[in-house]
Length: 94
Image (tube, rainbow, N blue to C red; front, side):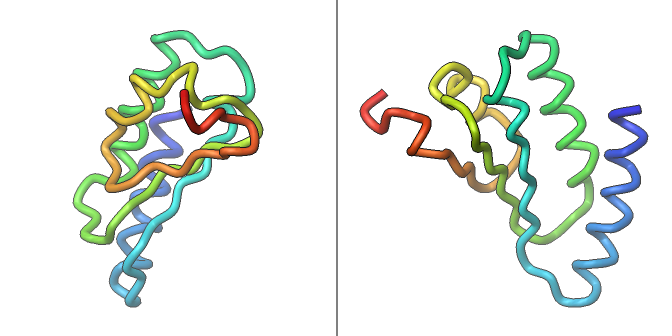
């Protein structure tokens, strides 16, 4: 179901880009709100890759409601141009 939804998003993102959208923002609090397995992270990365396939707009992934330092090693491997982190929940120095 995750990858089917990513394909639907891909169609929508392509339509948005054709209408002039220059930035696609993906929000995923579940990556940091609860404990996720390495398998979950890999599935999330691949679904983002599928959702953005062939999309010419810049992209960003935003997390919130949790400490992103727990997955920062994987978070910065997502196929996006930038990553947003909730620094209320994540200690900046970490």
